[in-house]
Length: 515
Image 1 (tube, rainbow, N blue to C red):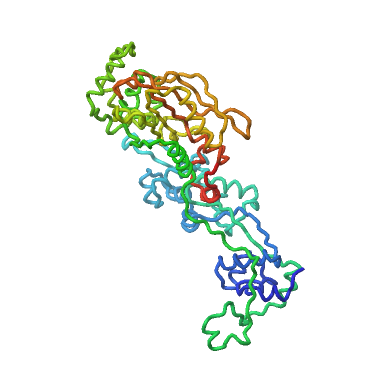
Image 2 (image 1 turned 90 degrees about the vertical axis):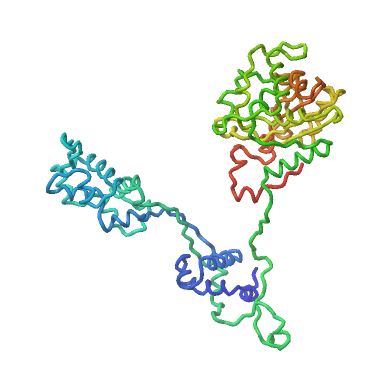
C-alpha cells in the first residue's frame, strides 16, 4: 500500500506538470505541446511516474510514410515522366531538347524513359543524320496526359501515412515510388501513450500546479530563516537514476593485456615489430619454400606500393639462400631449387607473429642464452569474411632458446599458459608445419561444452630455421596458437565479426577478463 500523501509530496515539478494534463492528453507529443516542456523532460517525468505505478506507458510501433526531398519537389512541379510527356505533346524532340523543355536532369531523363516505355507512352527512334534519339508521344501517351497516374494521386495524400492503412492501388504506387531516389521514405515511429492507473486517478486530484515547493535547503535559507513555513518536496530514494558508464579499454585489448601478463609472470620478454614486412622475414627466414601454397595470393596480402622492400642483412640472406637450395652447412638437402632474391623482397602484411621470433633470433648472441620471448600481435590472411573467419586475427607467439630445452619443457609452458586461461586440460597431436619438427596441434578441453577445441600449432624449430638466424642449431621451442577463439569463448560470442563491431551496448556490458 502507498501512502498517497507522502507519494504526492515527493513528486518532482516535472511530474506534477505532466500529471496535471493527463486527464485530457495522453499522447506523448500532445503532452509536450500542451506543457511546453522539452521531449526529454516529458519522457523523464513519464518514466518516473510509471516507476511509481501512477501511470502505465503504452508503446505502439507504427511504420509511417512521408515525402522525401524529391517527393516534395514533384508534388509542386509534377513527376518527371509527366513533364517529359508534356514537352513532346505537340511535336517530337531529341533528349537534349526534352531536358531543356521539361527542366529535367540527366537522371530524371533516364527514369522517365524507363517509366514511359514500360507504359507504351512513347516511341523512341534514332535520327540517322544526327545520331540522336528522337522521342514522340503515342496515343497511349496522350491518354495518360489527360488523367492522373496512381503515383501522382499518391503524392497528394495527407502525409504521414501509416503503411498498414494503404489499399491495393496505394500500395502499388508506393512500391513504384519507393524504387526511385528520395521521393518517399518510411520510418518506424514509436508512439507512446500514458494511461492513469487506479493510484494515478487518486493522486491526480491532489496535484496543485504552481504550488511553491522547495527542492533543497540552501545555506542562505538557514542563515536568514526563510526555510520556515516552506513546503519541502520529499525525496524518493527508490527512484531509478541514470546508469553511469565510465570509460574503459576495449574488451579485446583487455584480453590481450591479460595474456601478456601471463607470459610476463612466467619470465618471458615481449617481442614487437611492424605488420608490414618482406617475404624474406615472413617466409624465407622460416624455411618456407618459395613455391609453398601459403605464399600465394589466396592466403597472403601482397603490397602494391611499395611492391618490394630491402634485405639489409646480406650475410644472413646468403645463409638462408644456401639453406633453401642445398641445406647450407647442415646435414640437410634443403628444398633443392633455385632461390630467388626478388621473390623474397616482396612486401606483405605479416601472416603470423612467428616473423617476430625469426627477427629476435637473428639479433640474439650466445651470451643471451637461455632466453624466453613472447608476442601477442595482429596477423592478416586473405580469407573470405564470415562468422568464423576474419582477414585479421590475433596470435600468441612464444619461443624458448636453450641448449638444454626439451619437449617436456615445451609442453609444460603451454599447459601452464592454458591453465591460467581457464583450460586445465590440454592435449597435443602430431602435425606438420614447414618450420618445426617435431610439430604438434594444440587442443584444450572445454570445461562447459565438454569437448576438445583446436587452437593452433606448436613445435621445435627445425635446424634449417635456427642455424642461419642464430648461428648454431640449438633447440628453440616455438608456438603460435590463435587467440580470437579463446576470446569468443570467454565472452560467449558466436560470430567472430562481433569482436570488432564496436556496438556501444556490447562494449558497456562486457566484463573484464578474469579467470
